[in-house]
Length: 168
Image 1 (cartoon, helix red, strand yellow):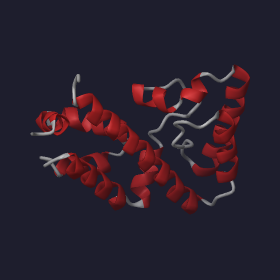
Image 2: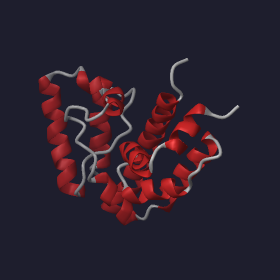
Image 3: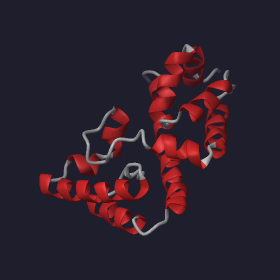
Image 4: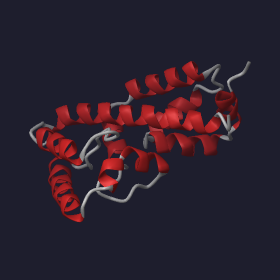
């Protein structure tokens, strides 16, 4: 029996699927690579295309993608982000001010916003992670931020697949 989600994704026009992919990982290079692997035989084929595209990103591609993320302290820009940032949504204004200050220091140091796979993390864990990462040099931070970008993207692709499965 065909996989409903894969059939749905294969049937989307290129622009619609590109928009969905850019929500998963805000890299046009990555999205173009995933799109070029269509039609997907099954979800494993889609996930393999995504993984191959992430591995093929250059440091410049990663840096370009990272600047497209909103700060963690901003209101979520999508249902994906709202689900990922649950602990932050419930945080007090004072604690969010602390987060904004750390984000500002991070952006000043690295030139892009903090990207953390935050789903399930407390605000204290996120603050500690930012403090730890502020000691990195830019090259090491690009590698670490790319890992978080992939983790976020994997979760968002899983959500996209689930949405395309339809009811039941």
